[in-house]
Amino acid sequence: MEMFEKALKFRQQQGDEPQIQIAKWCVARCLRSLGRVDEALAVQRVLEQNGEGMYVYEEIAECLLLLKREAEARPYFARRTKCYRKTRGWPKTNRRDWRG
Figure 1 (tube, one colour):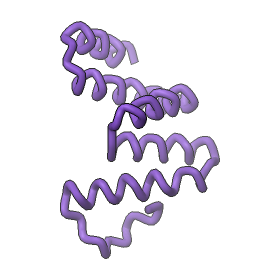
Figure 2 (figure 1 turned 90 degrees about the horizontal axis):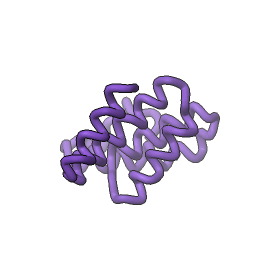
Figure 3 (figure 1 turned 45 degrees about the vertical axis):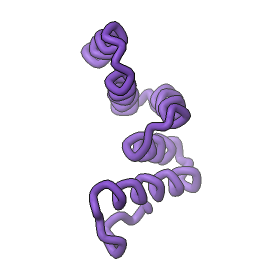
Figure 4 (figure 1 turned 60 degrees about the horizontal axis):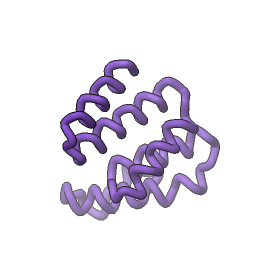
């Protein structure tokens, strides 16, 4: 966690906004791994408001699942899948993504 926080501070000093957003995402992802799901979700929600996309949607969905809020998670998995299909050319018939 400490390294991700240091990386975020470094990016903030550089002033490179896209890299700052990525560093924030990494901090939030680490928070989720540490079981600090509410904190992780709060960071991801801010990133969502800043216009971030596919990876933020997926993290929000994962956090919501851990918080036992599956119904709220489903639309975020669907948004992630829609973004993935646009950016990666994923076939619409792929049924392996059971959450989307």
